[in-house]
Length: 149
Image (cartoon, one colour):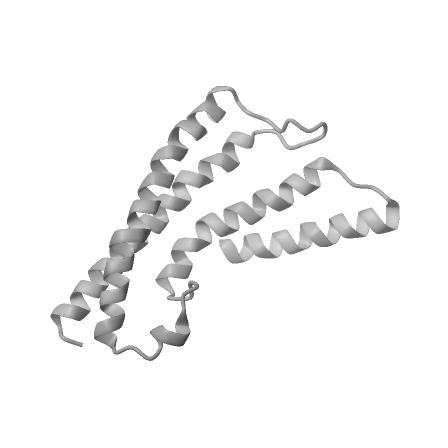
């Protein structure tokens, strides 16, 4: 899904740039659509990126470690950093999203997109998915440590 959203984002940007430079036409809705798509790509893609082990880390050191050391780093880092961050972000975003739904929030910009509350709903969903993937990483790390890889 994220791959298709990325393709859609590229298409929207190309159309926006073409209209801006060829016809001198632009709109708040096109800008908002671009950053809404980017936000959803980032929020929903983070868990998949972690699952595929493609996230950012200091690979200069990590790649030289044994599998057991990598498992310890993943276990400790995920337990002490990732899961608490996901929990706080998820919990704090709930009231933010709830308020947005309650007032049926729309863009404050003239010509902006309606239903801003839908994009805000992706925030807790993204952090929930990332947290669940973090739990999976913890379980994988424990399995590796118990199997003495």
